[in-house]
Length: 619
Image (cartoon, rainbow, N blue to C red; front, side, top):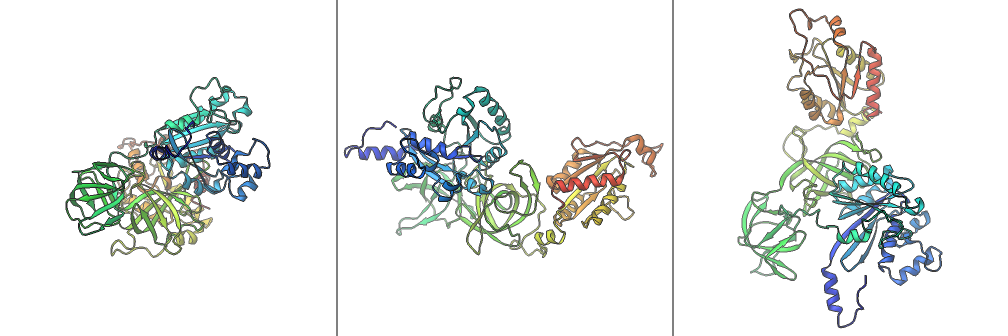
């Protein structure tokens, strides 16, 4: 900040020094009116990062005189933003100090602008979240922290703002820090830093405040100048997506692109995907000359010893350390389009330098951005964040997003409008047993879309209701009562009961047959509420069923009728004189427990229907 005057003699040295400074990208997030734009205005103002004409323009816009200006207007540039006093669009601002260059993204706090917030945070090294000292931790604060964590931002700086309105009380700051630390412990941040500030007055923003003698952790600017900015870069696994084959003349052939992860040096062995051809690096060229070694995120051109037939979209890696080649994978998807996800549309997926056609095979659940709980759902609308399975027409060379954000990220593009409709983060291979999709193989697929099933069934979504309990606890009685009540309410449910006289797959020990997990999953995919009355005595077996169906679609109901009552009801000899009492492991965390010695089957069925409605399976 105290740089010498720039003269013709030192201009080149100054520009070279500025170019070589480390770059830190950070995003400000938080609830409405927490002071995000004011904080950025304070940073720019106190670091002299504002031009005189900008300052005069903001003074005029805020209708103030002298040095008192509305600092938020340095970023809230849209007319609608100034009129409403809120941030709508993502605003980018730039400034520098002696230590670093900075790019700031000021993002909206309103829930309806979640896509804007996700866009602004997608390239950040640090997230600064503001919490109003008067209001404490809000649901929106948790929501934005969750999205920042989901996008893989490694560092979170929590600024407790407006401390001046709470008389700079340490107890207020400590209480907020304790509460939010507990929430952040469930997220994936590498570091969480807490700073008490007043953005309006400048306390602990650029200059240390004497009003908080109990705090000695430094200012926001000091934190930004020292926080590691390469923590989110994978330095271990070499990933080089080929962007362009450079052939300026007959004696030169190189592969150009940006290193996504890891490093490479002359003499390294290289494996190219998908051809799996190998060669040796003989040269690493850049605009400034040849290098002995290069690392992420440098833009380079590799020259190889052998002539390898590779082109844009291929991936170069080190042998023995390869990306996963996946055609079906699970991912988190942030829906960015005004038009809802159309399951019948084949979208274009852009991943690194490779583009392929894909189908969104299934939507498993949405993340409720108010409670951060997973809610069963089959569609995605604007600003929704969902867990999906994607089926690609050709393999992609990917890594989990948390291990490499470049090769784990992608966007979906509408093939008609060419608009970007979603941003995604790959989690890993999809579960086995998924439906084959058009474009993969000559395998027949359903001609009924999931959306059509959803509409025909009146908004019902498929689920598995598993009734477990001791023999003669009343599972079958409850199952058929639930089926009747669903039918009377114009919903569709079906009972799978080993004792109904039609089943030929009942197991003598009360467990489910091997084909049951696949049956349960397929019925749920078809939108049917399937009621199983198999006891399945072992918890581990029921856990396996839950995983097969999907945790969000599996409702475990413990029919907890006591053993002595079950014995009096037994008419099949399960508790006869030659039988020992059955070995049964009761659920530790059932979704619902009903005791049919105290509750009637109709009342228990109504309780299950209420649970299905609360989980979103019934409208």
